[in-house]
Length: 385
Image 1 (cartoon, rainbow, N blue to C red):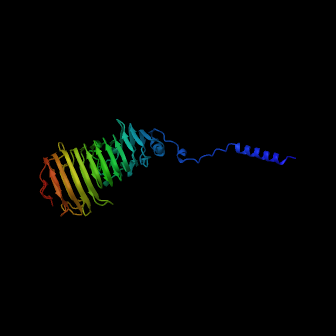
Image 2 (cartoon, helix red, strand yellow):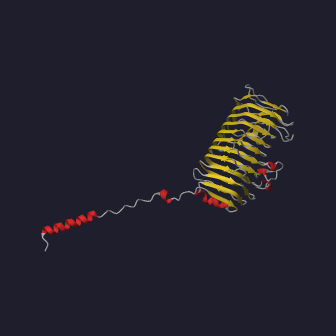
Image 3 (spheres, rainbow, N blue to C red):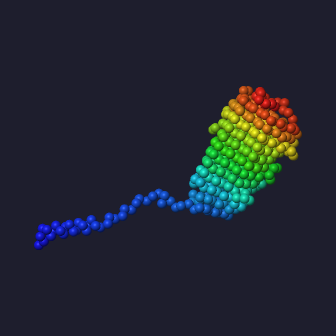
């Protein structure tokens, strides 16, 4: 039998053996960022199935290259809800097939997104298959083209749209959006194209458009609601000019702090326009047109209506303006050029008391005729009709 001392030594040696064994390594909890596969730096989609693959795989790519896609009729090239910081590049010609539907043909949304066209690229809506002289008022149903809703702190650059069936860019609910060197070319629709607006802006705060070139058959720009909007160094031909409105009938009917500058409006129905819907309510304030050249050379006599026009009877009875929309702070600076032989150089049709605080200088428009039916023209500060 072991003595008591021997037993104590044995127990102590056993304890030392246990304590000397290294403790097992603790496995850390998995991290979410380790479970998410990293995004590919660049993904290229092309051909007739590329549109679908791009829509499905968009979250996996930091740069999306769309190379000569063929999008079937009735389908949207859907790049909505892109991850922050994604870049989209159009290469070659992206063609959209024919279908009678509302559209849109392309849709994008997200934050800090860049969408750009590579040199020589184009998005072709094949408008000639739709154009029937009725636009959105009848005939075949025509899709809108490029929808940018909820696109914030983002850039559209170098994009060329050709042959839009109807509206080209719909910029809705956007914040701090920059649009540079974009082209809308609907020249082939001169005979039958209608409602081919280039830029429709709604519920926007902070839109800057520079270097745009537009040939179309409706508004070059139409600001229907929004604030802090700038259009500069642009060229607009064949359409309805640089427009505020129509104002009214929307959830928000306010246009504030809009500037059109350093631009040419050529062969257009009108060049400078503010239009508010008859019977509507709202606000148009602090709108400036600066250094606008009206080029009426070669415009068809029956097409040219006005150089500068403000109407508050839009959609109602012409000559019966309503005063529910206040138009204040309307500034013209160096608006010059000529209009067609049948056009009124300036036409103002304000409601009683709804137009005030205007300031005009350097307004010199030749050709056409002087209007004899202006109403409620604000007095002073160079304003005349």
